[in-house]
Image (cartoon, rainbow, N blue to C red; front, side, top):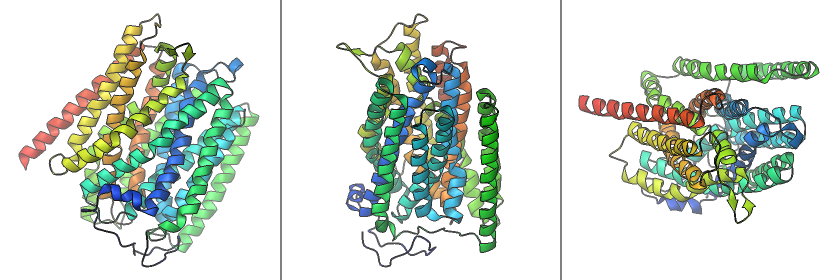
Amino acid sequence: MTTSQNTSPNTSSNIKAPAPDPGTRPVRALFRERWFSTLFMTDMWERFSFYGMQALLFLYATAPEAEGGLGLADGTAGALFGLYISASFLAAMPGGWLGDRVLGTHRAMLSGALVIAAGHACMAVPARTTFYLGLLLVACGTGLLKPNLPVMFDQMNPGAGSAQRQAAFSVFYMSVQVSALVGPLVTGALGERVNWHLGFGAAGVGMVFGVLQYLHGAPTLRGARTGPSRPLPPDALRRLVRGAWAALAGVVVLVTGVVLAGGLPLRPVLALCGLASLVAPVWYFRRLLRGAELDAAERERIRGYRRIFVPSVLFWAMYGQLGSVFSLFAREHTDRDIAGFTVPASWFQSAHPLFLLLLAPLFAWLWLRLAAGTDTVRKFAAGLLCAAGGFAVLAAGARFAGDGGVPVSALWLLGAFLCMTCGELVFGPVGLSTTAESAPEGHGSRMMGLFYLGAALGAGLGGQLSHLVGVVPLWTYLAAFSTAAVVTALFLFRETRRRTAQI
């Protein structure tokens, strides 16, 4: 893609590269754009590392210490998994702010990719301390990369309408699923069959490829506004840097003290982080709305965003259990023998990106067809019904397996993954698109942080509720989530009809 002016990553210029009218340009034309290839390949390798590590996390945490695992109970491991997902989303809040005010989208994405790679390297070391440090680094790096990548995508696709934007995000979702499909197969085979930390290391190699790909393709992004959209004044920036160094020193001293004291009990830490994920959304909404630079119309747009924020929390609470409760079902209740070969439980995590890859074109076409007839709230209600169907299918499979743990067909698990994928193809592209539309000028990355903050709240709640696994029958636990999703979806449909009747 050629540009009329080269813009350095540090600039805040509003000049963007000329582009055909996105309202008439076919979505498939994106694949001919060099900038799209750069973002696509970068996110593809990030998804390889993310899904590859996610496929191993719960299984490694519950594996006996004699087999190289952490030896945690299923409920505690589920809470740990939920905390990791929640922390990854929660970190998008400061990550989005840094992209808007300090680093810009370009530097924020590059920094995030480097931190993720460092985190995977720590997890490749066979020690508990480095494992938890690696989880923290991966979560922080994801928080930098993920909210800024869709902002960069939107900057490089200027002027797109709502339907075109949703379709483009759906195509982007589809594109990166190739590596997400392969990631669990590679890391699962190495982790479950050879060594857990070798599997984590393989995920790290994928992220290193992502960093190299981004550096190679960065010149194609110079036409976008990659510098801070609203840079901090110099005095504020110097105070921020000093505070960051002081905070880092404090963290190092604290972690050193904890290690020397023999560590902290895991359950209180999980509970404290879960509480943080509850408080952060309220604080963040208030902080955004009190911004002096916003006018009345922009504040009203942010208030209206709450209509999709609440159902998002419930969906992401369910989504956050794909790698924990679904992995538990795969390991304990699924018949994994095929012609004498036992399929690793982690391989079933590839079903999710496979279905994303197959269904994303259909949903991209669907958003274009429904552009004028279906609002976002109705789409989210339909997405919740899909998620409810997935948990209902898995609940039925768990009920048939019974207390004796008799394995059932893998079709139950695959059917549940299929339904959850349909739900994500609603909440992912539509949520990202709606967030981009709701963002006031200069607040794009921070609004993306708010989108991921809802996911953090949901994943944190789901992780805390996973303590109930083993306390109540698995099918009851799954059926309760399914019922809650159905009730919420029906409420959204009712509210939409009432709102339409008033107009």
